[in-house]
Image (cartoon, rainbow, N blue to C red; front, side):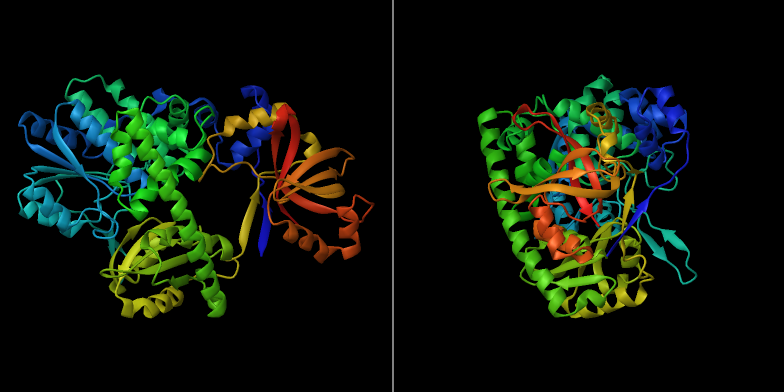
Length: 587
């Protein structure tokens, strides 16, 4: 089930269009993203490097830079401890390279997903201490590692935390929250209540980059040198599925400008291995092609391999490392498909659809795939989904949520059942004893306040716009809205009362439906549908007769009229440059 909702936020879009030289459709889409004032519109359309907030506003930022400077001057050993995902790997790279640039004696460690789990822990701290480390710097982790950091302090080490995850809290019986803080010598996380930094949605790599800027300034290195890491910051921002709003959107814009001609041999090799060397890199490529390759090593082997790729200076070695990561990602895809099918089968056979929060236990599943599978279950059933797997030290899991359900807060409410947890409103990880799996599922469902309405997928339409309005100029103008992603989704257009003139299947596997449509105002338009073709015709058959559907397939007169959500494109196949409407949904 799904509900189509047109967003109707008011504004004089014709006037805004004239003032900024944009199509009124662009103005309306921006208003739907709550970009309202002239200042906000300018920032959205034209914001650049000079518009980014001052890193000095970060709480403990200057303090951390000073601690690092003292350690460098005192020739003390520094260890960066990162994380095994795309954000953690890039954050580790940024800190490692940045610290080496100012003469630090520094190395790095990344947790092993299977042996260590997420983030800094006593084992990693013990290893650092035995290596003679004086100062630990975390990145993309550490905000919730209260016990581990206390252990580091007991051993006499200094600790700087750089993180972006939600601040841990303890909820009292009266509903009040007590936010918790570790004994770290400096904590940089814009989500801290006392932090004056205006933008709260940075990824871990962005926070690490801000610290490098402060350190460069403190060590008399030109701060602009740190901009060489912008491609890593933007890559991590998209890869970690951060909101592409405000500062993040600028960071990704700047990254995309650099990635197509990156000077990093490892990044260049990864781009080449994915046949993107001569193409304009987009946020899509990071999110669905390049980023998963960086993530794959942390999922199936060790993220040290991805870090090694970014650090590699030799092009031939970089090519070999990149090829290995691409192959790992292919293996990850195959394993994900198999385990997702098993999860769906379990949900159907065990009638879990009645649960408002889906908790699926896949004992044999590789624990690194749990989050991906949870995301696919969420998409299929539009409800929060948690996938649990059997690990060496009990059960581990990962969850993906819907907007109406804060997974991190709900896990806090059942924290007595968990040995470890952390994350965001939309995604979280957790560990628990296997004997608590059923109770965990029951308690989450007992506690939830999700309603039937919450579980109906809402498709938000930006503009109900006749396909006949689309021009080549409008399609190029829509690029002003890029980069698109979470928090700044691609514009959603809809048209109604469409009829089918002709239809045919094309492609090597005959799995693409090419359509000629007639709009309500009598214009012929070309359209294409990449989804389940059988389901497309079945949807129409539910409203019309099999005879009408058969007539439409054969290009004969029929009574079919339907509504569609679509995305306008320019089909440049064989340089035809034909306007084409990509049908996403119909009803």
